[in-house]
Length: 119
Image (cartoon, rainbow, N blue to C red; front, top):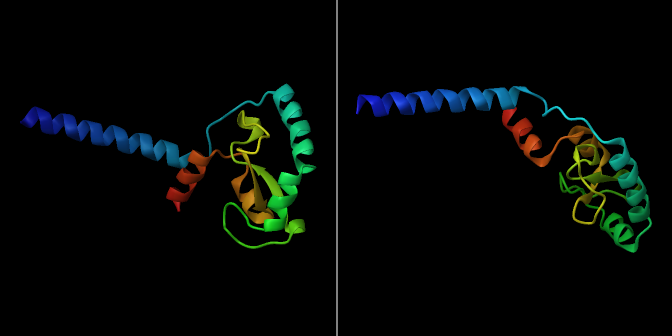
């Protein structure tokens, strides 16, 4: 019984150390592929010209805060950043207000959750 308690205690300490190290780092270091980024930027340009994107802008809703904005106040954001391997596809692109897009930076959704836990 004592051994089981010691094992549980050690696991709890390890989990706590892991959690603290994840929460205190702003994001996981990465190195983007310039060819991938250039290709996806071109795809994003094409997507901006699509009827689908124009409809998203007309809806006027920020994906992150849910606020209502004019189409001039909204930007295109990649949920999984292109620099982190994300793609310029309908499933990965959303409308975001400028403050939310700036706050997100190049964070992945998981890192955004961890950022929220720090506060």
